[in-house]
Image (tube, rainbow, N blue to C red; front, side, top):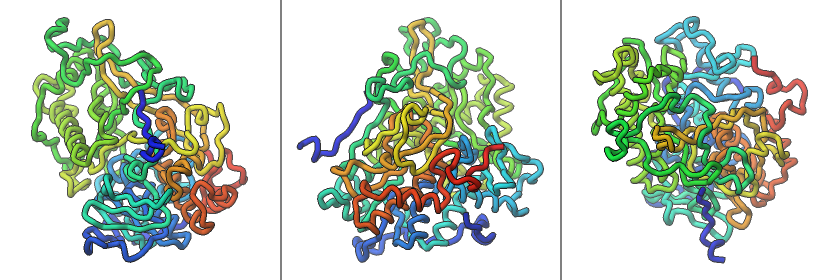
Amino acid sequence: MARTFLPVALSCAVFFMSAAGLVDERPAVADETRPAGPAAGESRVYDVVIYGGTGAAVTAAVQTAKMGKSVVIVSPDKHLGGLSSGGLGFTDTGNKAVIGGLSREFYHRVWLHYQRPEAWKWQSREAFGNRGQGTPAVDGELRTMWVFEPHVAEGIFDGWLAEHAVPVFREAWLDREKGVKKNGRRIDAITTLDGRTFRGRIFIDATYEGDLMAAAGVSYTVGREGREVYGEEWAGVQTGVFHHGHYFKKPVDPYVVPGDPSSGLLPRISPDPPGEKGQGDHRVQAYCFRMCLTKHPENRVPFPKPDGYDPRQYELLLRVLKTGWRELFVKYDPIPNAKTDTNNHGPFSTDNIGYNYDYPEASYQRRREIIAEHERYQKGLMYFMANDPRVPEDVRRAVGEWGLAKDEFTDHGHWPHQLYIREARRMVGRFVMTEHELLKRRPTPESVGMGSYTIDSHNVQRYVTPEGFVQNEGDIGVPLKPYQIAYGSLTPKAEECENLLVPVCVSSSHVAYGSIRMEPVFMILGQSAGTAAVLAIDAAKPVQEVDYAALRERLLADGQVLEYPPAQAGSQAAATDR
């Protein structure tokens, strides 16, 4: 079952930016990448301390600065923007009309960038066209663009922070064992592994992992809840459920010697039973890298052969290809300049199923090992498909035309610097978002933003069926209409921590998180968290006691969409997808 963790104490008792800010060369941020000494940061108390480098961290910081408070970003990452600058450039939008505030402004800044002729180096604007996900990638009327290159996103995030003079401490890793200093229910300061201490009045955990939240003693869970926990139809093990194309559509033998169980299983198939349908477990949906690929000869780097390459890891793929499966390029989604945002698709693809269960709570060293395993697996997969003579010639030839984009991730071997952490810890806060709120079976109190993307979980395991064939499990895709996200899902329980907000590892079930986890939503919730932080400071109250009427008023004034259709007729966000 999903593991829930209680704190020890409880268990024992739209503005238009200038073209200059959008050039590819990133504007200088008020950036501190090296400590000035063990006490760096201790000389002042920031109004808001944000831990994390995601898009939510950036929007929380920008909003805080716009509201006149001092703010600092303490980022374990070198590059800001999380997945939005880490390869996920083909945005998972859902209904674009509910993306408001700073999140929409980000996509407006993307639009501004690609209005410049010099932005189109490897492809003309006309050749790219207007390819989006169900709706146009470029909305000229609303001046937004929803697909982009990784380096463009990073430049926008860095430029945004520079405009507001937000100091950023990069590669600053929280000391998770003793780096959170609390006074009663309040965090006073956090300290990084290299000795830097940051004192604040309000703290925001904007990481994908929820490390600050956990270290502060806030309740959380990891894995999938069973149906009995929240009464959710789609909770727990989902054997026999195939919502997408990520399963074995034809029988594939799982054994080293086909038909002989005594020969052992092929690599990357679990020997464990999948569990009973609806049963909770510890498993986490699969991670992958969102590769930026290209066929353009001048910008293409052939797929490298990774250290530790083992072609035996891909024997199962050969058997899939022998069934005639050829959906290989379905998720090579186009982004500008003849590049892709490449995602997992099919029964055996870039998702490294079953190799991330311990990531959410792992030590930094163990996480590095898991990330390295994912990189080795995925690089090896691409090299295998492009070079192994056993791969059918049509596949080998087609894959071999692609390669890594030379002008992306230039300090990281052209490989994404961010692993796609689709899910890690999830807070158990004042209010837990579940499928009941997302599917409108129950009302959602105190909206601070909206989501609309399908409830989407990737597979969590690959197992042997009772019939003796290999199959994947955990993939769900439940369509829905725009839904509200409760303020209480961003706040811990008051008895656990009074001055922490969590806009990424929000309080939600595994099912609900499958939709909430989209990058535009994280940016929305980051802005809302920044707003709430400022209001809590001004009122000298815990974050749980922020006056919702005042919070709502400010969020609406700043362009957030809190209901759909919006209550205010004629607002910019009321436009529907076209």
